[in-house]
Image (cartoon, rainbow, N blue to C red; front, side, top):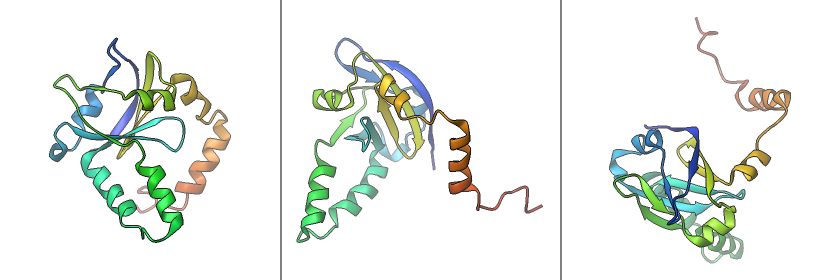
Length: 155
């Protein structure tokens, strides 16, 4: 499995296109080709999924019971505005205007690889969502990762 990782400062070109960083593009699964899906994030950012990753998420949401009002409400909002995108040979794609407004992206963006997906942020908004207190970050690491066995402990 390829992991999408790294944090990159990017600029939109005059046509509103963003170039996906080369290291991110190189780690897209081969079976996706240049096909990705762009969606709104739960925070004020955009999320880019390789098509294969999106298919897994899509299937989970699409298979919710349509006769349940809460599920329909979630599906409607989750699928709202999702866009299938094909990267050009240079790794560029146009950010739809509605999504640019949602994420408040202007001329610059921060692109962050998060394993199976990529987030695209307005640099100022991104900074607001980062943990500033390293002790708090350490406590979260302990909470989420602390109980997992370490390779060093097993020796």
